[in-house]
Image 1 (cartoon, one colour):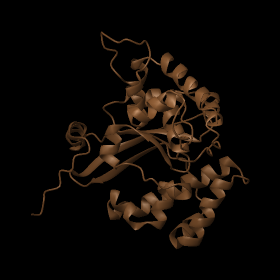
Image 2 (cartoon, one colour):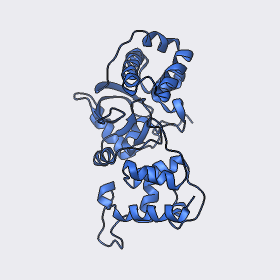
Image 3 (cartoon, rainbow, N blue to C red):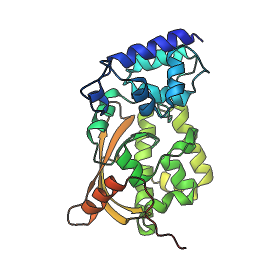
Image 4 (cartoon, rainbow, N blue to C red):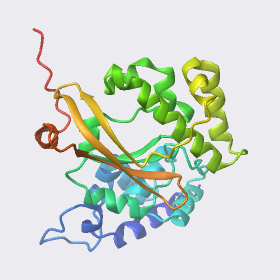
Length: 283
């Protein structure tokens, strides 16, 4: 692995990004036209010391997850992302993996939705990136990999994952998830190993999924009204809207309050309080 070349490439990409492009204030007294090292580290979820060592051509080989985070922080194109992985001698992640490349245009839109819960997911419902309001509303994505990173997979294999919706809504969501997944599997083609592995595992583990899969219902999810159970604020009525990528492999989701409900106040409160736990202490 050529650490020096990797560091030089990271620095060259950092220098070209302006703070406004990633939702950071430009400030009147910046010494560099691009991002500072500490800003890249913050955006990628890394320590400043770790990122500094990478740019200096030192340190350990970065993980695939860290490379994905750096690619998103630096708004790399797909070719640039692939080049970064090659320099680090890491295999390119599958398109539906949690380390998959997110189109810079979607990241730009995500940044512009600063006060609105929003995230980018794959067509297999793997969360790729969330903004802070989405983390506050939905919680952080799991650290799982493979099929277990998919919310649809967890929906049918982990009962705790359903706590985000009221029990009386579970059947409707299950039907929608399966219909959406069937459309995604067909769009990917019969040779797609990732989608096939997920369906095979769900058929084996979940009788409910098998029953719904046999119905052959198909419906791409573009808009839905949901009731989300927040641990501190209770029931929040939201409209969930989707913007699909050209190939349908990724979608930008954002959540807006349903008119006539108290969701406006609750989402505003959530944006102020962030991820603080407001649940009363039983003691």
